[in-house]
Image (cartoon, rainbow, N blue to C red; front, side, top):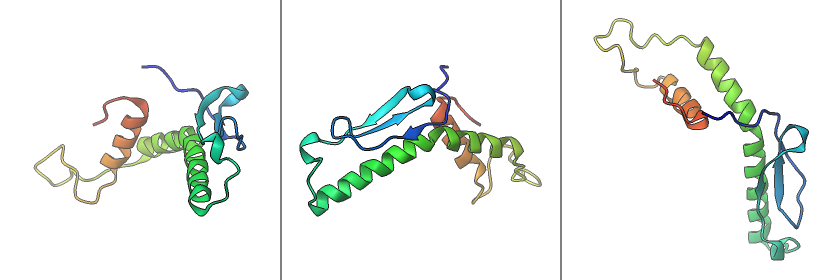
Amino acid sequence: MTEHTKGPWIAGKFSSVVGWPVVGSGGRLICDMAFPRHLAGDEAPKVVAFKAEVAANARLIAAAPDLLEALQTVDRQVFCDCFEGTNSPTEHQPGCFVPILRAAIAKATGANHD
């Protein structure tokens, strides 16, 4: 499995040429959050809302390495007692966050997580 570009990642400033670039350490381009050039100066409410949504997506992508690291830290430190006193050693109790946590890590890393 290939490792992702190490963080921190930063959502750059809007450019009418590329939209919002997300860059990693050393200025390495992670992705461009495209925004149609012909709409760059348009201030219509729908365009302004779309521009804000694209900017929010860029910020979320830029936070991905930090979020993954936080989830992995919690996973190493969490103790799940779902299996104590049950007949099933694999089924988490309703409301347990561990399966959600591990599914998010697996999605980010491309790994299977039990």
